[in-house]
Image (tube, rainbow, N blue to C red; front, side, top):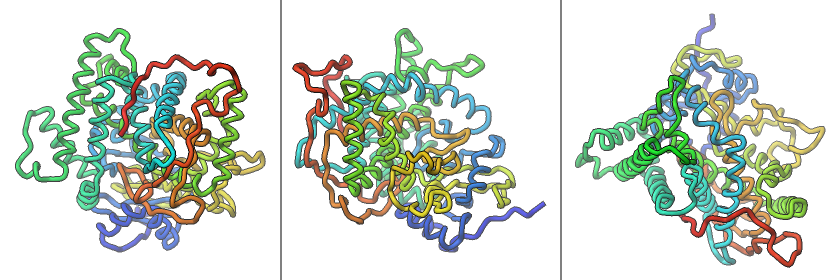
Length: 501
């Protein structure tokens, strides 16, 4: 039997490696790959060793790991979304939880939200005017936060909608600022998350007040806001269970869901899954969309071609049909190509509980293994000599390379694939279809080779300093519609006001 051992890696101090990951993760991974090859070990503060793998056979073994080989409770996410939410649990509880939390984000229920997504996106674009300036990740984050709050509540407006929206926005901002990031990096992301969750439970469930020291600490505001959010969710859970008739939305579905035993989910379990959905549905799309916009700013001919495809869909359907739009091949290829080159989640992690074979490696227990999406997506042997070129056509060529699940995995894969990946893709496809049809942008990053650095926000990789854009032109709501004496018939509209971040 071989001796379990770690592959080589940098020997810098742990906090230096953690800071490099936090403020330039793409660059640091590429540097390590060039120096150490397709598998290397990083050592970060407060975490077990992190082994990054790029080789296809290693990635295949990684995604085929069995539940009993894993312990995901140490996932390095530094914000407190609840230690019992689906991302941090394993074995039977994980499988049962996925049966509850995945169905609302796939199939008919997801398609039924497409019109609402389009309406929310249209309202935001309708507010724009030439000369307006935006930071693209925050603009997309504002839109997708509205979408995920609607998804949870089945409401687009009203006091309850705005209360959830405003609390979540305030909580995200207080949980992901520079001070919180630095403390989480130095202390260890999972240890920091556990500390925040313990203090949240003390205040929310045991009635304790913040200590004098806590009141002076950067995390105090984040904990207080989460207590308020949890109180609101708990009130809604009890109201839904007391009167379940006609209740819709993901929150209602979770509140009324039962385990296979017939027992209702614990209130804290529901709160954890709701918080996980709110964060995942917001920050992932904000980061992904920011990189996507950067590529389109640099490739105006691709942006124009996207618009032509959308206009063709409108001609065929008589209106902007969001379901038909999500099936546009070139539009989907453009998003895939952005996620290939600049995935917001640069790797997918598993924590080993026993010595385990991964490809040619034999790794010791208590090792974090990561399938490196950023590195795998840029493998020249897999993708060809033009691997570094943003070329959506590669996804459409009949005789071209067709990537498999171990070549392209921006949302992870296997038994633990991202539960909200289909919702994220649907809302981004509709959003960028409408951007391409209706909006022209300018930016200091347009039509040049200038790129921002990278920074970590809520576990996602965003362009450092954001993506500043200026609105050049906003076309009418019905731009591209067939000429008619009357406005094309639209699905019934029920929104009068939308929240903005």
